[in-house]
Length: 95
Image (tube, rainbow, N blue to C red):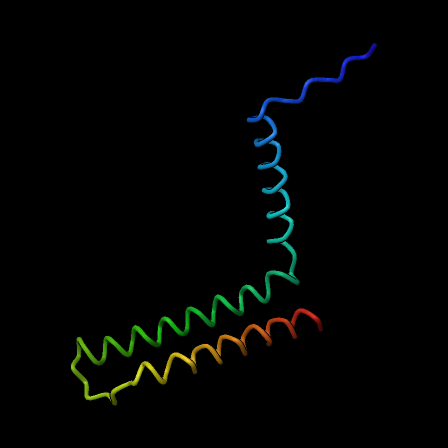
């Protein structure tokens, strides 16, 4: 009778899986339908972090008299803007 072939060692299966995942990631990063929305979100986050950093620089370091921000009111606005970016990114991918 034919004996079933032995399964490859665990580390060989993990290595093969890692290579497959890496190949899939390389395909996705080169796909313009994926790259454009990622670029949009990355630029938006970069702009948000830049603006917050500039605000704190002007307020704390330069001691400019800037209006006080109520963070309890501001963070929901940030969530709304983030949701808008997600919807915009989905709309851009479908066109």
